[in-house]
Length: 448
Image (cartoon, rainbow, N blue to C red):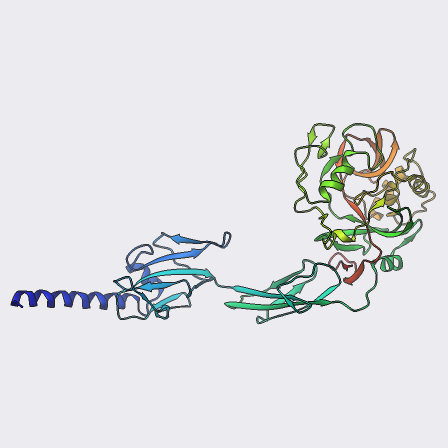
């Protein structure tokens, strides 16, 4: 070999050794700030991919000033490095702790870094000892354990909640077993706690403890009310009303057929709201008259009509009292008698409160002496008051239905008017109380 060739090889070897030394020096035991100064994330020494918390997909980082910190951790399984010949090296050369990256190597490396959200939560679920299965019916209780001390079970929302800063990996076991304990039925609780015992056991007054968690939201108990079942038998059932309205809707598209079951609002509630359907933009979703369409997307707030739905199974198919009350001055107890004198020819899962339900929710009055249109003086003693103008399902004639007014009285509107609607359902008598005391902060949790 010639003298000059030996000198060239020696010179190249010195350059390579210098390159290895400089690369190692720039990575090894340096914090993130200094690494950013010597390299961009998309060139030279590494490429960076950070998971998008919303989509769950990794996105390449091209901003040379960005470095993940705080709630991120290096995914050592996906992250990898290669040498100058493209050969993979062990991922053990990477260490990410306290937002500092250490590369332990004595050779030039090119690395692909993947970052995940730091708090990984794994929940192992079992039902009756079968792993990966959730209960499909009511009547189950659960036990929860996690390797992080900041957890708790929220029975209202049926979810695990964490407080404080989570450790890198949280693992929980959520085990469901059949509840064999004896529970109080909701109907017996209502009949023992309701303030008014006239034509049913009813909650009355300004703020009774009649809150119940139903369909993933707060509802309120009207009472244990005499009800005619689909097959004709009459019995008391717990009648509940959604705490918040689902918007302003027309009772019917035209000013006729006020009887529940022959109107567009009945169809909307019993085929769209009950069914979790988006019915916006077409009949029977009417804000008023025949062409005033409303917002009727019930995909989130509706009740599932699936046969195995937890809450949907609790609802009874019943006849709703739709007898005509001829005058708004009719006394409350007389109104109840008129309403219950006729039953609809069509049963339904979903209804509305009746005019007498609204009257009986008032405390401090004699129900046989006070008329429906004379309740404004007692509005603060009525827990059903306060939603604005709200439909009842009580007809007053062939073209109008009664409504609870924002002044506390009961009046009537033509059927194609659009005012507030709150769905009402009757619950199966086997529904029982799992927990809760009926207050707003601790509503009854129910099972079946």
